[in-house]
Length: 158
Ligand SMILES: [Zn+2]
Ligand SMILES: [Zn+2]
Image 1 (cartoon, rainbow, N blue to C red):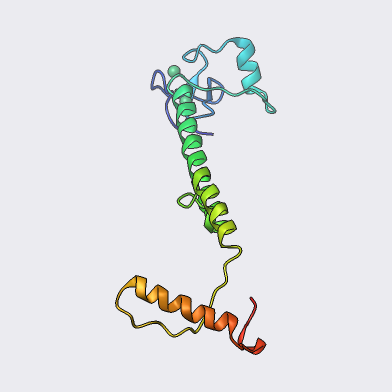
Image 2 (cartoon, rainbow, N blue to C red; image 1 turned 180 degrees about the vertical axis):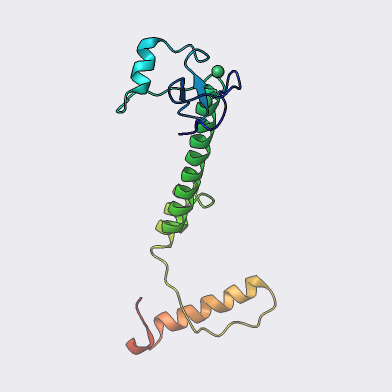
């Protein structure tokens, strides 16, 4: 016990028989100084005491406020960790890549439109100057490919 310290109220020496020790700041206090009744004294002196004593100095509400602040900051930290975790396990739909409903509909329509595309690889690019002329060249080459004696081996389905 901390009875080597003086009473936290009157600052005079306090022994085990004269007072009790605060369960929060562990400073002793005289029963009289702490306004402790005879019945409370009996409870506090009981070896198997189940009650606690907190002196006026130990402002419980400030302790509780401190704990509340700590809980709030821990909660914020847990939330942040959860976000990081969900972004890691779901990179495409992470915080910064969340598709809006409009973008999602656009993507679905785009995929639908592309579902019938035929992609031709390894075609020699036209060296015509304008886009319109190059397109003309491409159309001719596609027609040649599709309607000429192309071998099955030349076409890969993916
Ligand atoms: Zn005292
Ligand atoms: Zn105290």
